[in-house]
Length: 263
Image 1 (spheres, one colour):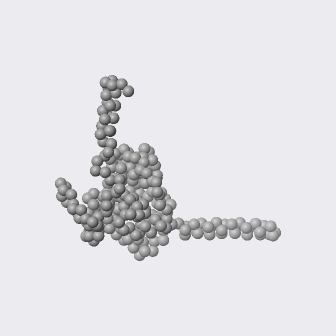
Image 2 (cartoon, rainbow, N blue to C red):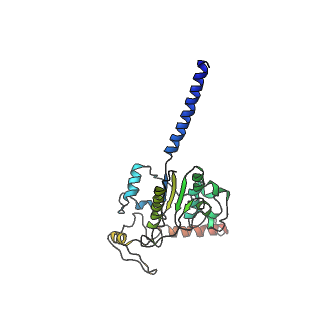
Image 3 (cartoon, rainbow, N blue to C red):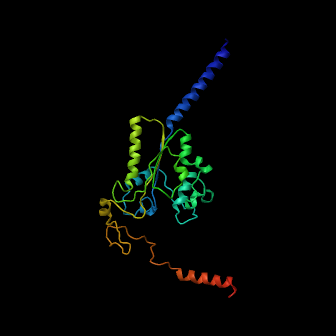
């Protein structure tokens, strides 16, 4: 065997070993993902978006300071009053509001759909990830939810840790604990969706005391004001200032449509 052949073989072996090393390195670098979603959360409750907010969210503040914050995100719209339903479909599919499966409308058609296999859970499964989900029930994408290998869904809006959103966090901690016991080395994708804040807006005793709130039950009354409570935003108005103008314009357009007046 001449020197050229030996050199060629060594080079091929070197490149193959490099590719194998790069492949193993890439596998080691695969990150874990924790996707956190709150229900009916105003961004202006958070100091990240509103420095004057009195609400303490130290963990969110820390994540924001170390990562990326979107300052001008907008809701794309909805085909029904429950905007969370199409929103969750868009999150799961990456599609626009008008290109979603029928279940995004009123949850009346929830049978299998081709998009189900292209949702977050399905794609991470195919990539070799372990997938776990905990969230409220309803107002979501049933076909996508089924793609997760571990699912703990329940609507938890009570005023205790077991009956409130802390339950969802506990499911995640239990899942991570099980992975540690089994020494599972595969990367994970966790979808953590809280049931709060959302009607009926019940809080734990310590938070109620901290922010001067109560778990109010009287549907015909209003709770007493408390100095500890967050103040109304600067743009709060008791009535829409353009209500009368809007009514006049609507009536004028109706009359024009029926030919009673001319433009």
